[in-house]
Amino acid sequence: MSAETIERFDIRLPASTKQMLAKAAEINGSTLTALVIGAAMDKAREILQAHQLFVLNEQDWQAFVATLENPPEPNEALRKAWAEYHEAGLE
Image (cartoon, rainbow, N blue to C red; front, side, top):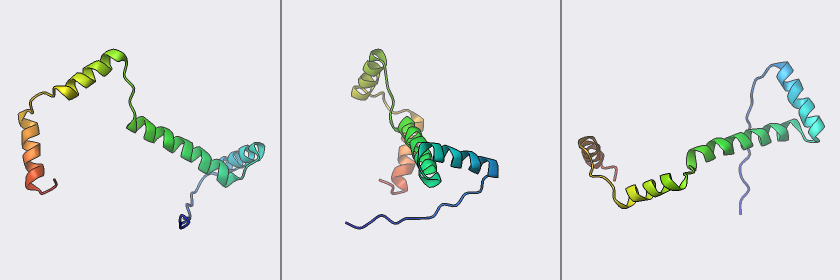
C-alpha cells in the first residue's frame, strides 16, 4: 500500500487572524496546521453531506417513493434533452 502524496497549501491571511488561530491551537494543545486542517475538513464534510443527503418526513418519503415507482411521462423538454444527450454520444 503506497502512502498518500502530501501537497502544500499556502494561504495569505491577516496577522490578527493568524494570531487568533495560533492562540486557539495553543489552548487546544495542537499545532496551527492541525487546527486549521481539522476545522477545514469538518466544514468540508458538512458541506458535502448537505449536498449528498436529504431527510424527509414520512409523508414526503411516501410521495418520493410513489414518484420513483410511477414516474410521470417525460415532457417535451426532457425528450429533447435526452435526444441531444444521445446524439452527443454521452451514453
